Length: 328
Image 1 (tube, one colour):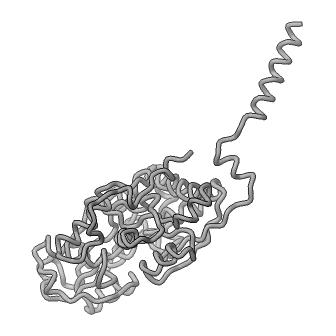
Image 2 (cartoon, one colour; image 1 turned 90 degrees about the vertical axis):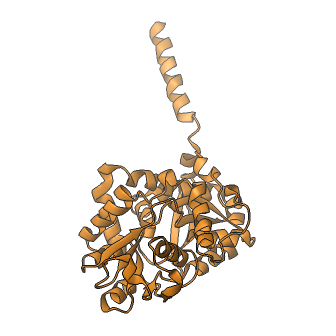
């Protein structure tokens, strides 16, 4: 009788394990994957987490299929998210702040980059910031958050930003070429293109190291409300990538992924890892958005006398919904 009783108990445990409910995200995998159109800019280290989540199957684990759509500029990217032409995007922080204040139906669900990965690099023969007085410089665009960041850095370095000529060069590779041929004397460069300039003998003049949400993950709010599981899945996949990339055991694989995604040599991407992950720690820790990361964008605009990204009293909850990261 004792043997029979034990057998029945074992069977009961097995059945309980089989019938126990799965975690929410595991249950989703029994359904057809949800396609999520995500607007991005040209391949660069801005999208490193996206490349990790795609290549390592983190999106698939969350039952989403990401379809990349490349936008020509950050404002165009944000407009696509706002209009519902795409469901999500990886934009610039200042563009999102302005859009939300103007009533755009978008919300930040995470910080892909919680600090900037832009480095101010001097062109051929430029070894000190003061040499940039009265020269031609570029931050990509001539207006907006990135341009204002460059003006702020120049001001902080003792260079009058009103005395420099700002030119538009939206492609990072073009900025490296322009630095080399003397078309510009200073430029903000993102990884891995900053390393390409350094290897040509150019010098890094400055890095802004305070919190600065350069690249948030932005969702179309009506879509996210109707498709909560997919919105959470997209956000949590990138959160997993953020945790993964900071693990030193994953360094070599992370470098390989960036090299393949940007079609850049591995040694250059190794330098990008050293700067972004080890030195600047630019990837949003756990993908979380800090108040300072958005508020500093506004403060920089105010410091240089530019039209600020927001003129309203700062309220983090107006721009950021942490519930997507907090979901199981």
